[in-house]
Length: 276
Image (cartoon, rainbow, N blue to C red):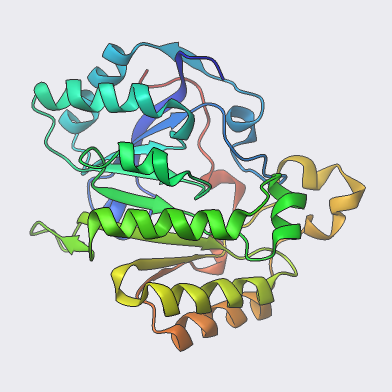
């Protein structure tokens, strides 16, 4: 990506974790491009093909304020890593314009600690993935060597900044005010990898994080066309998801779990530049 901000959509998003979407929706801004090359990415049109619209820092700050006026419970920066300097400027500008809702940093977890330190005081809630334990799996599916060690170091920095999860408000679904929510998507045939990730997260972070186990894997992108990745061209089984879920209970992690019915293509938004 170039130096200019490129985004594909800004919207009220109701399908994140309950503490993120709440009752009024999360103010999601979907950025184009990605630091990962996930072979199964459901947003490949913007992450890999770079579909998007160029916007200025000033316009991005206006979008944040517009989303708050629409009722957004937070501003949800979806995949913002490669635009961090511009995002910092936009958040500061929006706060001078009286933006008052929390900022969510929603990423694939493949982050440099130095980048995250630049975000201290800017981001209130971190929403990273921990995708892989096995390094060969990370390289094969996301071209991301040393993924697990990199992502775990990133989560440690996120937790240092946010502390234990804090909730606020009087809604029936209490929105998160500060904290770190770690996501993991169960992949076809890789439940043992999931179990190892969950175990290690429980040992290292325990109650300092919320954990979100995801069943929504749906084949997109290269897994549908590359014969070498054919074993990933299916949805996960109930057995695979149950194994990962059992590991969550054993690790004592608190948070969220998706129903198996979440693996549906219609949950992927259409990136038509709405809201930009």
